[in-house]
Length: 448
Image (cartoon, rainbow, N blue to C red; front, side, top):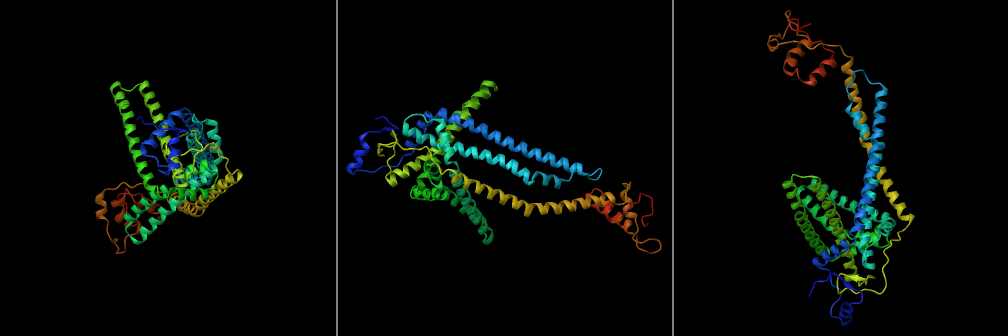
């Protein structure tokens, strides 16, 4: 019998099995899950590529805008410092430069561009989660505008849920690290942190499709993801490991011949374009498969554990019973409430970063800058000196006492004890400049 990925609505096998009590809905095998992803990727390839290009352009523009704004602030600050008038011949102050680079306005500009690009990335991922679900409902290619609109409506709750997941993971890793440093055995605690992170990720990874396909708040999303992941974590881990191995094998099978061909032909524009296009297609395929594997486990958990009957026109598993209606994945969202929560979380994170900078970093920079300026001022306002021309034998001939029995002067002792051994040391010259010592030339009386 030929292997079929999909069963159309109306096929009696699933309904008859359930009615006779022979079997309930079955989980997807890796073969069916991967084949389902390949079929849906081929169907939605044009939409996926168009989404990728749109969000790639938006992300690059956001990063470029942030870099431009941050660079403009750095340039204006440095110009203000130079116009303020530093000492003639003063070298650039690295502490002032560091303070300028990490100025709150600079960080806000560059960080704002990065956060905006991250926002576009989440938008792209949300739209990618929408494609398989919408395609299963219609049995056709999903529309790009519908995917973008649905993702935009659910975007704030999607970001908030993923941010909370990242925060929980970070706090767990920090707790394991602190415990390991306090009681010893850091290596074992780091291993425990790694394993716990994997377990937590597998537990809450279903939050992404829930955030896009269900109308829930961020905490409710994580709570539901926890419930759906119960009992299927090991299956998810095994399927994701297999997906990683298949992805690596596919990448090698596709790219190695192109690399060998490039080596034989010595490169060229055609080979470069072929490599670029193939790399982009592989990127979209791997991205789609990764996101779809997560989403398919969400579908599977609802069907197998909750008895959900999807309103699709086709199903990847014959034992899954379809309903007569159609599911709506338009993503209504929670309106301004979701965006308000996202704005509040963003402002809190920005305030924490700016407050930490002002309380911890800026005072240390100011103190270091004052010390640096004082050191330079001491060097430039002490008695001028000329570099001595001496020979090592002179250091051996300097007396400990002068002719009248009095101790050798400070300058002479400095020359005798330090100069001939440390004449290339920067710290020695700073000490000489600060103390105002005049280094005698060869042949002069070292005691004066």
